[in-house]
View: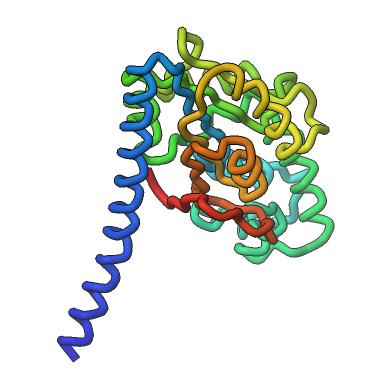
Length: 257
């Protein structure tokens, strides 16, 4: 019995260590490629998505739903009590799945929650609740200090989220608003993320040498894989949308920096 418990403990420990080792290898290779390109004056670029790649938006969703639970005009007392038990690990990509995780399935309440969420999630005011993914700030800063041009390419739209995005990046310590950094956002909310990022690839290709691209969505990672054949393309495995398209070959999966 003791041996089996020890074996189980060893297995549990080996999995995260292995994942961390893979992440470390990939990150060091990207850093080495950036340094080599910079020394050759090739203007190395590293592209980063924001949602689920550098920033965890689940605390933002949690804050919105806590406010929803406190608004008696939108929610029943029973659903409000259930929502008070919601925690960040229970937040899913789809709002109905998040609500269902704490037993809120009444269609009227779900519809009210969706409307309440939509008015706030895509606004500058709530972006301050996002939290940096562990290790993200340090890694981006290291790349920047070694000559990388940091380009944030995000599906957030400029009209509703520009000011909040810049403030969140600055306040959390990401390089932004200085030479060698750029934030590219969708011009309209209606444009599909994959189409937007596909349109950006030609611009990025002429702007410098794309060394690596990090994204949390299969479709976007596939776009970068097709566009930048020599770059390292990383799928950051976080809060994924349901039924993602198959991932192209030669894309690295990472769960942590």
